[in-house]
Length: 206
Image (cartoon, rainbow, N blue to C red):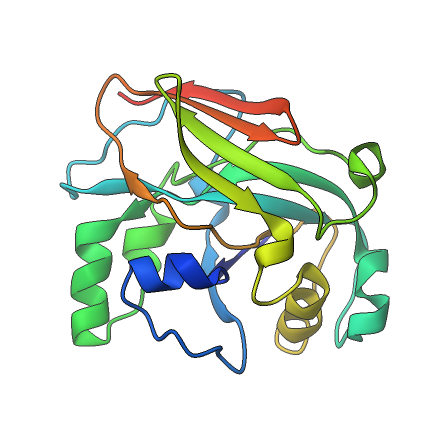
């Protein structure tokens, strides 16, 4: 099972991190290993190797059939459920990796860096993956809001692009990028993630 992630897929978020504000030609893709997944509301422990652990709330799409070289016009056939996830990032390590041109594997793919919700049928949310609102609350305060229609690359474009390089398999997850508003967490924080008014994530930082 693969966890495929898209970086800088919302323009305002790209700008808040100082990324190139010009629309990229292709999505920025990176992977997390399966050991990054954290389920069932288990707590996230801040690793010793970072002094700046930051949340990135994302709409997540689950692949439901095998495919490679998928045309964008057929991409919607490859998913029927969505969920919410957080791409936790060791930001201090990522900043150093960006400075030196090193890969992002360690700052993005460490154990338990991807808390994930249960998945619900897209049809229950109106059927349009590009018309979904999601948000993150920390200690009862909303810190991040996203609308999937603001993605630079749509879900179908992401699937078409990624499937040029990787065979997509049933159960693969695509983290579709985070909107503006990322920030640090600290011990004791209570995080709650919402998708179209439904609470999808509920866990603590330890």
